[in-house]
Length: 214
Length: 117
Image (cartoon, rainbow over all chains, first blue to last red; front, side, top):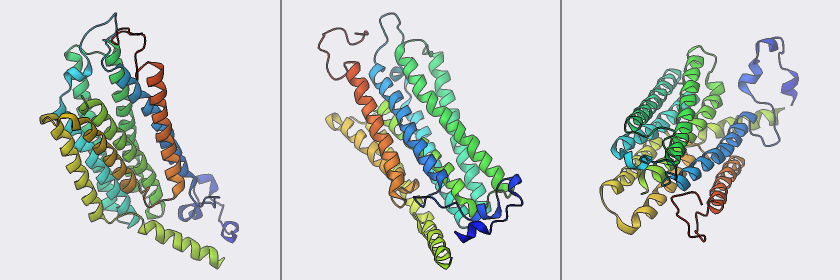
């Protein structure tokens, strides 16, 4: 506790102090507030995706009495989606390698893995845009029927999560490149990694339940 | 103060000891890739009555592996596990509640399931 009294607060106006970079304030659990907050957020995000997946499962075969048209399941291109899923899965590996790199103070490797993860995420998003475009050309719009609305809402929300993750990864790359984030703040990269792995596990569920299970 | 310093050093060491080595993570990723390949194989070959249970089991195993190793829940504080598992359980309860409200489990009225009953 005596350490707190010795903090140089002269540069508090500029944000983090040197003490902040090497320690975190003591908490009841001994865990950092940032990490606890991220896990609480991920737990609550499970509810969002739980509701969206449930809605899709309940409406997947319903085109409604007043609308018609195909369902998303009629148009799935499983080989293409399998490649996208594999790309996203491998991005989790590059993310965890970025975390271990910064923990070992290998900053160049960390930057490389961060960029690789962002690139793999971008490939996944590009695949989703292609899938949506081809579905639309085959007559499956957002308002074609209730099944299509449920499908686009579910996969669209996941796509937004991945896109936000890419923005965070690029931001981390900029901060690591500029020296604002070093090995002493490796937990920041770890927390971004938790978010990235979460979008991966959500896709594991979507790929199995929405795409593969007939 | 020495006690604080020592415990902080131990905490930092624990953080660095968490998880697997890079090679370990690559092995985990290879296992995930194989499991994904098995999943995709169910699309090309007919697995009969075991297809849906197999896909559900593979999904749960992949989910568990990513959460345990890549997200470090296996090595991290139990507090994180409680927070996350609570969210997963609530999500499953949401599904059960929605299924019940939309007569997913049964259709006692006998109306056309393709319409809104």
